[in-house]
Image 1 (spheres, rainbow, N blue to C red):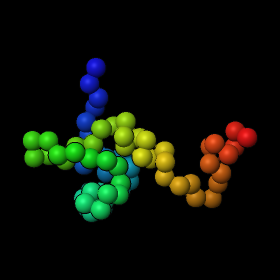
Image 2: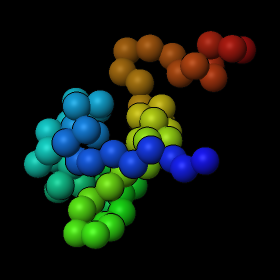
Image 3: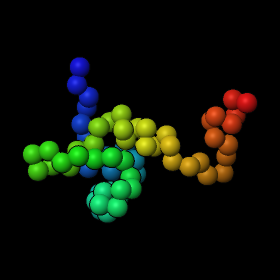
Amino acid sequence: MSERALTRKQVSALTGYSYKTLSNFAPRGKGPPCRQACGKILYLESEVQAWLKNLPLIGGESPAASRG
């Protein structure tokens, strides 16, 4: 079973970050993890989802805190 690989354009649509912002994140080690394969930058869908889940919440409690 292989995991779905996403292009930077797809990750941009999924996350709301612009293509250019994602491009700027990569060399700085920010943003979701990415890989280069066959001249393309690719992201594993599960890693993008995990990265999104770990972003800080604004104006609310974290899900872990609300389980109390």
